[in-house]
Image 1 (tube, rainbow, N blue to C red):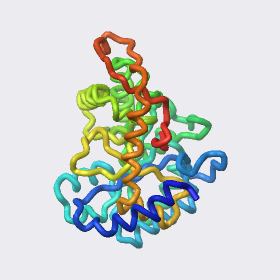
Image 2 (image 1 turned 135 degrees about the vertical axis):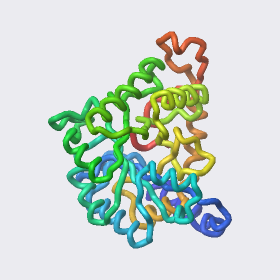
Image 3 (image 1 turned 90 degrees about the horizontal axis):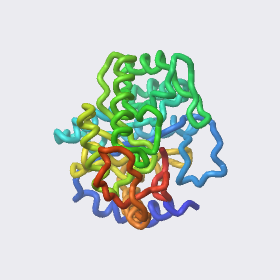
Image 4 (image 1 turned 45 degrees about the vertical axis):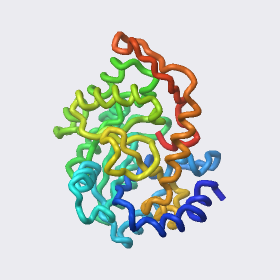
Length: 307
């Protein structure tokens, strides 16, 4: 049995149930990638990013049966910040990488349950014909436009899906601004949400602060990351945590994640990133001069599933 599941269901969940009534409401933001039959047998369940359509349908059915309201990221954050009384039964669905299987597999299931989602596009891989990202087919602009017109929120996932932490700030600025501009031009609607690709370097406060400045300057209003957990009122709007989802999330683990029993992994994730701080971040532009950041993540850490 996978260790994170064992600890979550066997140890954390009973304790969480006993004390959850005294805690403030938190917003689950679920992080999906591919909704397909893709096999990930060689990948640990913790790191998998594929959810089979049948499992995804089960997840959506559970949300319906348990009385959860599924809203877009922007709507969920607005309700959360305004103190909406229904927030304890509100959940946000997010999908990274702009994969075409969202359009072909996930979207019909969402329509069946009258649910919505937020989808983040890496614009270099979105074209008039399906492009490919990491071997998977991406949606086209006409499909993205159809989704947007149907109420699916479209956000940015950069242009080229790079490891932003390895870029200079001028390059990061271009990735943020250009992806936003392209989506807005293609879809004719504002883009205000951003999803950070790969592991988020939360231990490097200087980098995180500079990234937030760049996101604000580009007129984004919020950002989600690979930090694990549910969003709380204390979280910064541009570094929101999410809950990673895949085919290994059965009914018990899925509900435990929604209810907060999986949030303990945030401590493990933060500790691991602190231990991984060894070398300074690469700098290569005038905008980076004087940066003495000292946390260098190497891609996806053992506590950072997804991309």
